[in-house]
Amino acid sequence: MNDLFSLKDKVIVITGAAGLLGRQHADIVAKAGGIPIVLDINRKDVEQLATDLQEKYGVLSSGYAVDITDEAEIEANCNFLLSQYGHIDGLVNNAANNPKMDTSSSKNFSRVENFSRSVWEADISVGLTGAFLCCKYYGFAISRQGGSIVNISSDLGLISPDQRLYRKQGIPDDQQPVKPITYSVVKSGLIGLTRYIATYWPKENVRCNVICPGGVETEQDPVFVKDLCERIPLGRMANRSEYQGTILYLLSEASSYMTGAVISVDGGRTVW
Ligand SMILES: NC(=O)c1ccc[n+]([C@@H]2O[C@H](COP(=O)([O-])OP(=O)(O)OC[C@H]3O[C@@H](n4cnc5c(N)ncnc54)[C@H](O)[C@@H]3O)[C@@H](O)[C@H]2O)c1
Image (tube, helix red, strand yellow):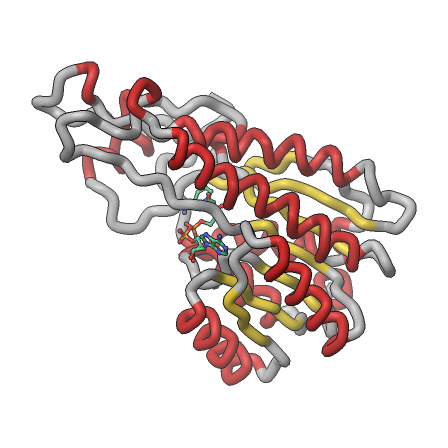
């Protein structure tokens, strides 16, 4: 059983690793005996994370400040990793711009008619271009001996945001906050990227799958949480550790015959 889920000596690159879920992905990779390579634009946090993982699990984790929108930085990091470890076995395309919900200004920026091209391009740049560039370099490196790519989409890659969830009292309809359009576009795009890559390197035994997670409960407004939970068959949001099992499954040999799969892990949200 342990062998089936083992990541022993597997070098796994995780983007956006200093964030809420990236840390969880890195933790399960290390726990399964893998070598998490944690990348983030936030140097201090990602280096500290790598040190914490080394101390906790005795693994060769290392952390690097890499902006995944910068092709030269990715190429340099990929070449460095290959010189250090000799191989890269897995990639978790996790980084994304956290969409901001604007409730304060008189002209709500999140609404389509106000949404600026610069925010659109910045969100696409991290969420889609970044994932493409990581496939281009780390994915190609994985294709030398085979391995697994896991993309992190969202339940909102499968369904449209229910904008009623984000409504605030006392705000006119044309200024109500909405989940930004880029979130849906990025998360749907990652499903297309997954299917493309799944059929691109199959002979090289590169598998590529995508997880569509539901929302994690953190410190959201209780009214929002209650309304959202009414739309989730399991009746609650996720705990931050509840995607670790799926991540481990997809990175390990336990999923050796799975590629191109779109996996909802959302408490049933997209079933209703
Ligand atoms: N948290 C949730 O409820 C939830 C639900 C569904 C899907 N997701 C998805 O899971 C992933 C992780 O979410 P999270 O909640 O941990 O987000 P987060 O905002 O906590 O973490 C994202 C990380 O990405 C990093 N990042 C941003 N731009 C970058 C860049 N250019 N290069 C490198 N790193 C960059 C940030 O510094 C941050 O550490 C995202 O793709 C998100 O859309 C999250």
